[in-house]
Image (tube, rainbow, N blue to C red; front, side, top):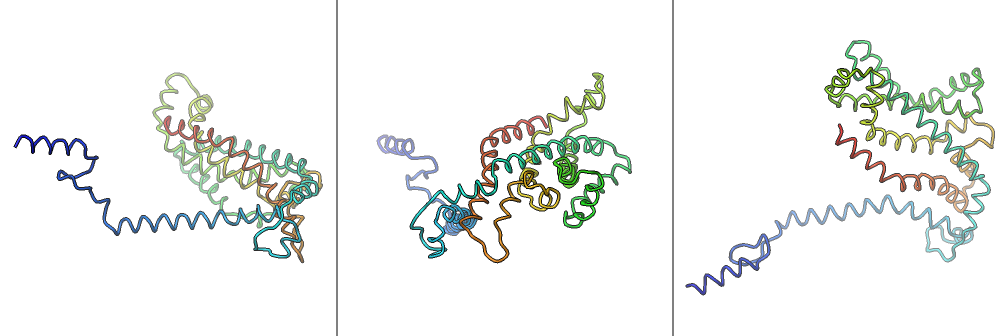
Length: 304
């Protein structure tokens, strides 16, 4: 009797967690649940392939020769070359156009975040009727497409002397994305407890000091999200710089890459390298800033 008890205790001690008392292995779950898990994994892999394959096709085609692509556009490549990238680099004046795009994007992000946060703070805290209507007007501005206002904006920039000028393009982008910034910041500020501001007011802080010392640091997570959205939209935009920047030396990367599109023929070996060169700075920026964006979001979430 004692020997049997000792053997049973030894089995219990050596059995892995989740094993029944008799020592038999536990079942991992119903077959239907395992089948659904496998199906979900397969669908996820297929979804990743749908998004990754066009990008891989663009890279491979950019490295192929024109004769190889003409012989088998979707076939296996037989030769690779970097001449396509060097030709696209020189033809789109990549260095100058990249600096133009970076300047326009940086100034636009700065003006949108500063003006948007300053406008959203009173709209989030003032409970009077007029503030609600002003907020609704900003929300209404998010539904106006740029194609509708291109003609009046062109006339306005011409009359103000801002046509073919970096400042005019920055003003246009600020007006375009300011409603989005106000919507983001207002929704986020409303989730911040007012007890923090009341404590600051008891210490003698005014509205501006309270905003810049208390509220603004808490806006880091939503600012990271907003800057990501604005950077993608401004960097990849084609309409505004194409219409309002007529000097070839002031054009952006996407406008110069668009010049490779011919209405009759399209050469993938010149268009694809230009497109990849256009998005390359975005990839580099987000790879290096990803850690800071995530850290800012975590810190802001803890403070909020």
